[in-house]
Structure formats: structure tokens, C-alpha cells
Image (cartoon, helix red, strand yellow):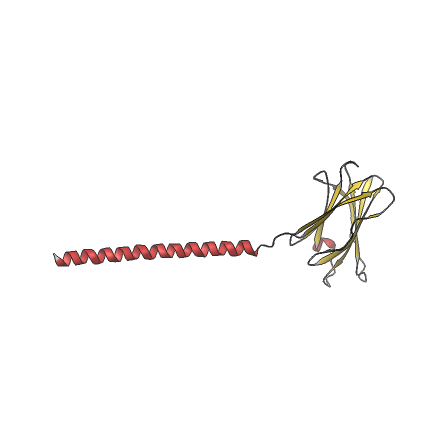
Length: 171
């Protein structure tokens, strides 16, 4: 009888010990999963958005300077954006400079998005020629605008999600 009781008690002890160990392993796995989720979400780079709303008016036959200071991105700098209306289209000139020695088109560094009334404007023409000796390059873009009532927004973004934007009116 003593042997049976002793056998039952030791079996119960091992059984309870095994259950406690499994719950510790389960808790440890949950901690590891939670830790990797935290690391993943903290490693994502948050996008920075800087937007300027301007009272400037872009009209026909006059290039209007839209930036009061340069826009600094990680891999490039935008020195100036100019816009004008010509032949019923919006012409945009972006003066930019790569921060590396890399000789490449603007599209390798960033993207230009032009919107009006929440809709992306159709691009008519894009000229991204550059001379190897130029430090500051010109990106010339032409868009069909919808109307002169709603403001236009030019947004430049980098591959890592940093964005700068400027809004203006058409006349």
C-alpha cells in the first residue's frame, strides 16, 4: 500500500512538474514572438512629412518660385521648385542635387507627385536630362491641370518615405 501511494505521489509530482515546464516554454515562446514583433515595428522608419501651404499664385508667362528654403532629403537636396502656366498646362521645374557622387536620374532618388483637388494630375512631359559637369540639375515636368479654382500641391518623396510638399493657387 505504501509503495502504491508513493508511486502515485511521485507520478503526480512528475506530471505537475511537466505541465509547469510546458507552460514556461509556452510563455518563453510568447515572449520571443512579442519581442520580434516589437523589433520589427520599431525598425520601420517613420515617414516624415513637411508641408507648406503658400499664398503664392502661379500664372501665365511668369515662373513663380515656390520654396523659401531647401528641402533636405537623405540622398538628395531640392534647392528650388518653380511653376508657371504655359499654353494651358502647368510647367514645373525642380532644381535638385544628389548628395552622392552617383550619376543617375531623379527617379533613382525620389518621386514627384502633383495633385489638384485630391487627384493626381496627368503628366504630359518629363525632361530629366543632366550634364555630367552640373552639380545642380533641372527636372522639367509638364501637367494638365483641372481648373484654376482649386489649389495645386507638389509633393516630393524619397524612397525611404520622407516627404515635402508645397501648395499654391493658379490664376
